[in-house]
Length: 177
Image (cartoon, rainbow, N blue to C red; front, side, top):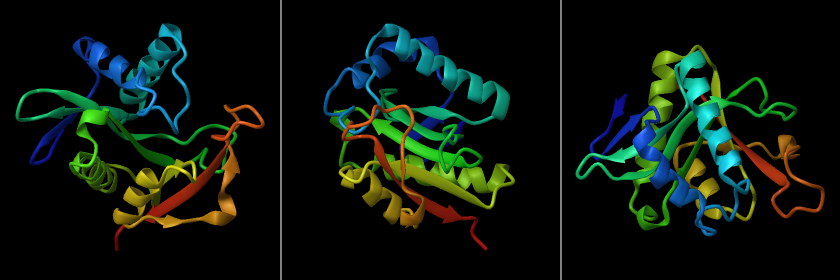
């Protein structure tokens, strides 16, 4: 568990399912992400998160607001996607319910996740990906000190050719000296 001034980042629990599903069912939240077509896809995502936590000690943790226990999204670390330039890297990412956008929660959680990575993982860098249209996400990457690596932008293999979400941009941050 990771605690910040306003958040608790923790592994997924059964009680989180409804709130996280509501976020994934919001077209604005999922606008730049892989679609969550049905309950089977949603359950598979939750199973991946649980497996990463069990096997690696990190995952996209649930973001719980300390003030009231609200589940506001996920943020954390995961293995980079297979068959992409980030396959052997640790990737940071986040997704928040729309009601919590613009309040600094994503940055707070992402910084705490990076701090956890540097303290607990033997990695030289952490990476992040998004689509170029997602200026909110890559803007946060830049505010975290991440740097764009345009030479390694790529077409995500999980998205169909012709999809406006297929092309991904890559950001990196090196371990602090």
